[in-house]
Amino acid sequence: MNVRNFSRLTARAALLAAVLMCARVQAAAPQLPASAIADDTYMVGTISVAKLDPASLDAAAKAVLGAQAAMVADGLAKYKAKYDEYAGSGAESVSFVLSGDPNQDKKPEPVVYVKLKAGTDHAAIEKKVREAEAKEGKPDEMDITHDGDFMILHKKGTELPKGGAAERARDFALMMGSAEKAVTLAFKPNDTIRTKMKQDLKPDASKPAWAQAMTPLLADSKWAVVDAQLGDAPMIGLTVEAADEAGAKGITDAVVQGGQQLKTQADQLKQGGPQFAGMSDALSSLSDALKPTQAGSKVSLNIDAKAVGPAVTNLLPFLMMGAGGGGGQPRGGPQ
Image (cartoon, rainbow, N blue to C red; front, side, top):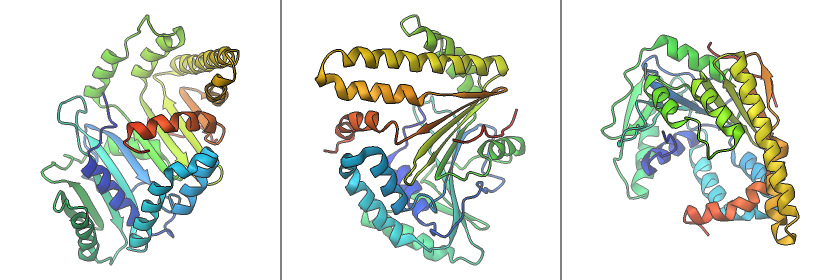
């Protein structure tokens, strides 16, 4: 399963929807039409652009990357320009929903829901989005529809979710809580995805013992939530609801063992000489960050993004080339 392969069009749709939001908007749990969540919905994300403003992004980049923050300066500048263009347009929240089977050749496309304040001129905002498409030379790639106070953006020809799954919608709302971070992603596998996960996550003797122990526990887990906090003290949070308390303990122990292995590898690299110092620091910082906590059947991991800066700065040049360029308490959730 690969849920990361969003098309260029839908990634742009999400960005256009996100920057519609005014920086005065306060973070809140995503509000979606009843039709948005279907029985096969497996991921819901929400963005608080109040906390994803250019200043917060810039502060986070500098905190994590230090001097190498200059490598992402162009991307941040483009985001700021788009943000400034759309800020104050009247949107209250933005969410995206993924439904269907990501294991098929034709991957599911995200559907973006923009909640507009009552009385907002929908036609004016839609016109602005269409003008932005035209500037990029890709006009009319999106269908834009409206449902009450929601503007809905999705790839032309893509079916909207066959929604009305009230119980699953409730589960996603519980998983995401108040969605008070800059970005919150909730993943709850549907039956098709869980079957494929169990096939793909079978123990592999070529992998370390801790990974072999953890894979079946992850396949049986009920859901996972990832969130990110930006600004001067960026944090990344992960919460997994295991199948039961024993599964949560197994995941916790496996993560700790994985961290210990990274520490051992870091020490070995350090002995190899100064040319390996950067990678040694990177592995060591990752090891120090892997400190999970368990509460019943939940496992939480809160990572200080600044602390893993050495790992990011060592990997960033490779990531840039590949792209074609130069803690909180465990959250609630459904059982």
